[in-house]
Length: 287
Image (tube, rainbow, N blue to C red; front, side, top):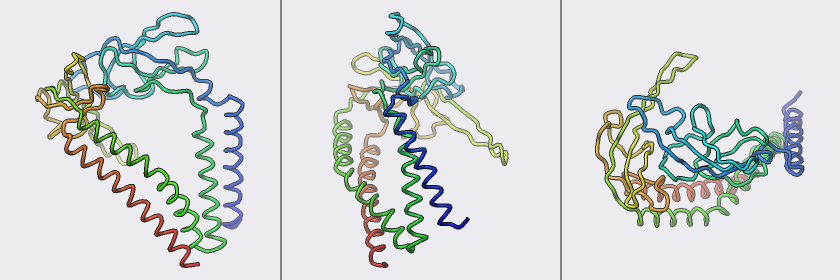
């Protein structure tokens, strides 16, 4: 089997997967469509143990109303329970989901989730078909077609999303400008050691945990993974926390660094558009 035949088979295989996925979505049979999505509320936050593990996130007790039985149910996030809760305070709303008819298999998300049609996997399969067609064009017609087929559509896609990126940058700058400042303290430093099963190499992940009380009186406990010098030795250190009043999970220890990062993200987006457009133009020039 030659390259051309292999690529045709590749496209056909992933095309079938994509069609099956979209068909299941239209029929309401995807996993996402069969998932019950609810809104839970944190009732209690358990203080992390200094030197413990970050696995599982911050330990919380959550309650939610189950419409199937009409009762208020209280659960914890012990074990593998979906997204890691990295910021918690009593009264925070988070997402709770479980397969239809299996409430014991509940999972958490950091925010309540909207119903989903489950199009992620078929869209990924469709992307793989697109990749196969681009490679097939390059093999059959020459490499300039690969530049046109890949860089052209992605340049258009990135350019179409540039206004949204600009709006997100401006919104982020507005939130940083409106942040309030309170004192906080590093109440624990979590340590996780991982071992590579292939070569036995080990690496350590250090996760400081910051506790602060907002000006509204909300006691927040959160992982702090950036803008903290010497995180391994930060236990007990006092810090200055800048937070968004509407969402204390959005906080930083260094708003100036956050502003620089926001500007850099926009500059990178523009650079990607320029590079992709240049590659597409080069492909046309080489035809």
